[in-house]
Length: 183
Image (cartoon, rainbow, N blue to C red; front, side):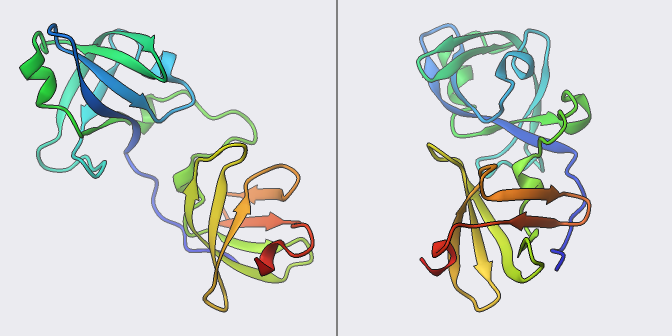
């Protein structure tokens, strides 16, 4: 069973601007990338998208002047944002990076958006359903799967359960413990 595949997006969401910090234009950014040190390095070009993470009308190019860790996020200073009011204009927006500018994924890595719509099947080939959403949780991220019967099941995205991910084919093979799919 193969899920429907979509065209890869030109931009990927890499952070969310939560609030201004101080009076000099710094922003508190919640990073949405495993590589914040690279994505938010000085000189990096990003796109300030809308509050839904879209890079459409109203999006504007921004350049990172500096960034540093702060609590569970980052303090990011953008070129041209020199005061609090300039920073406040970006609150609630998502920051996006050009997909072509990001470091290539390592072997076995995937972007979570690539999992959406993928078909899920058991190791013996029996279909389970389609990935509807991916949740980043601890201790393991979760795949929300709509079963072929219309139920929603949560499947931990761990090596113990997810045996194979074939992004090109839109297919995820799982070997769940007994009872997981009945929850």
